[in-house]
Image (cartoon, rainbow, N blue to C red; front, side):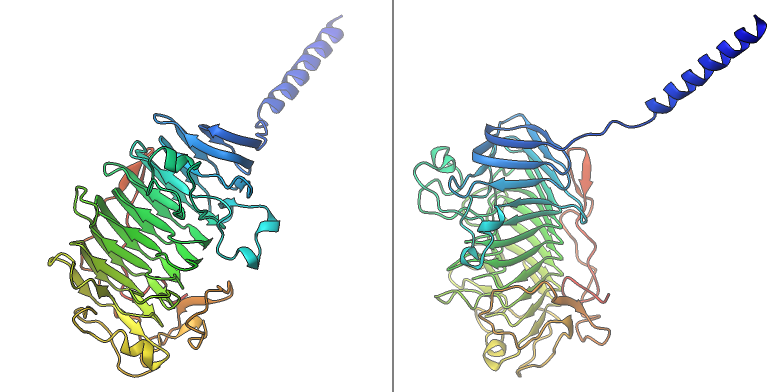
Length: 417
C-alpha cells in the first residue's frame, strides 16, 4: 500500500511537471490575411498580407499600427487612397520592411512611374504619423471627382492632380519618416503642409514622370531633413517654400543629403537640386550634389528668408554644362566653404560604385550602385557639425522619441564603409 502511494505521488508530480513545461511555450500569433475597404484601425500583425479593395480611412481619434513585414497590396483597378484622419504607425525593420505595393503583374517597366494607387494622405486631424522602414511604390494615381481626397477637401481637393506618396497637413502634428524608400511614383514623392517633421535616412528614386519633387515643404512646417539619398527626381530633390500662409513660417535644416542626377528630366527649366523660395528659412549644410541640373537655386522674385544659412555643400559635374549650372549667380546661391569647381569632372567624390558618366536623363536606378565614399574621396572632411538642428532632442510619437541624427564631417549621406 505504501509502495502504491509513493508511485501515485511520483505520477502526479511527473504530470504536473509536464503541464508546467507546456505553459512556457509562447502562443503562435498568425499573421492576418485581410481584404479591407472603408474604415480601418487597430493592428495589422507582423507579416500580414492586406489587400486594399477600396479607399481606406483611419478615423479621427483612432490609430492604425502596422507591424514589420506586412505587405499592403493595392487594387490596381480601384486605385485606392489611404486617408489618415487619426494616427498611423507603420514600424518595419531593415530586415523585414513594410511594403505598400501592387501585385507582381503591375510592377513592370510599363508602369515605371506608377499611378496604380493613390498615396497616404493625412488630414488636419492626424496628430501623429510614423513611417519607419517602409517601401512605397507604383503609386501617384490621378484624382477624380470620385476620389475620397477630393470629396473630403484633402491635398489639392480637385480632380486631375497626382497623389503624392505622403501628404501631411496638421501644423500642430508630428511626422517622422525614416529608413523609407519611395520609388516608381508619378509626381511628388512628398508634399508637406504642416507639422514638426523629421525626414532621415530615406531613399527616393524613379519618381516624377513629367514633374515632381522629392521632399516638397510648404509653410506650417518645422523640419530636419538629413541623410537622404535622392536620385533623378524630375525637378528638385528638395523644394523648400513658405507658401500657403500658415503658421509657423517654414524652417528647414537640411544636411548631409546625397543628391544625384536630379532636375534634367523636367520639360521646362526650373530647379534641379535644392530650390528655395517664398520666405522659407533654410539652413543647408554638408549636402553633396552630383550631376544635378542646377546648384541651390532661389526664386529671385520671391526669395528665401535672409536668416538662411548655406555652408559646406559639395558640387560635382561630369560634364561642363552641369558644372556651368552650379556656378554662383544672382539665382544660384554660393555658400560659405562650399566646394565648387569650374571644370568638368573636377572634384569627383569617388563613390564606391557609380559611373559618374551615367546619362543625366537616366531615371532607372541600379540597386548595385553604392554611393558611399572611397577612402580617398575629397568629400571627406568637408562637412561641419557645429550648427543647430530643430529636433536634436527629438520628437515623441506614440511614446517613442525620434531624434534628428548628428551631422557628419563629410559631405553627403554616406561616409566610408
